[in-house]
Length: 312
Ligand code: UDP
Image 1 (cartoon, rainbow, N blue to C red):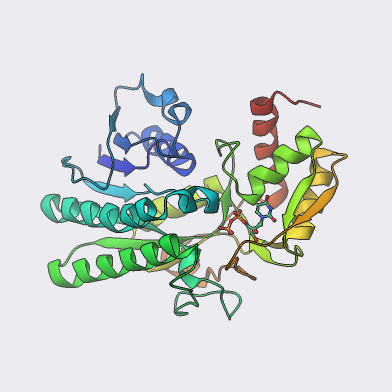
Image 2: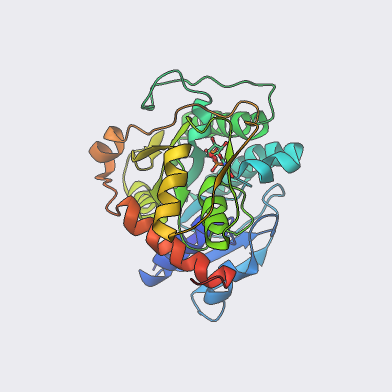
């Protein structure tokens, strides 16, 4: 039985990760400060003797004697990470630093959840790990983009200086059950708007693209990566690309909704094209997303139908 620490335990990806780790017979310690995470995401595990939850902010140091650390703690949706940008920046950097210090003290393997945002408004598509990115260091997304980039720097330097085993996963847009209704991201916004018959809010002209990965595929990738002897950086996502316009139409179709699209201003520095090149993940860890977008979205829609009590 491994002892595994998951930071950001009350978040949506952590919910699926912790479920898998417990099902596989591990002991899991979860920490979170509930900045964006919710009690509902840890509640199902609280009666499990192999799960322990500690309310803690990763900006402050902590100690747990563990074999593995998954560092997930950070607000990740644009409206959430922009609400208190200085806190976001600190969470990225001090959160990574404190996880690395723990890895150094305990000898634990560590996996840092970085992001496709390190590529910024990419000038190449798809984005592979060799691309250094195109990030505005002064814009409203920089607290997250540059925070995550700096955390990658810390990880590489800790690996070089202290010979650690710390990994960098660059997570692309991920969706699934247990996303927060008020998360503010395109998948949850469009599904909830469609289910409620509200206007679908498209930012800009809707020609920008994103590629969507179902959360269980992503979690499979995180675990394969942790168990591998490769440290990355490694893209994890699904190259299934949609323009925002086409994504809105697809959600309307899947939900049989009568909602109409409205067009709102595009937020500053919103990346124009995002699609992961996952050849390296296939080669190094055998990552191969298996859920089709239709299956993944159908599960997510069913979840939100329950949540919104707006079954049709
Ligand atoms: N978006 C949108 N309407 C919404 C929410 C998001 O058109 O209600 C757009 C957003 O401008 C971006 C894309 O959808 O181009 C993905 O946004 P999201 O916040 O999900 O994640 P991002 O990839 O930008 O971090």
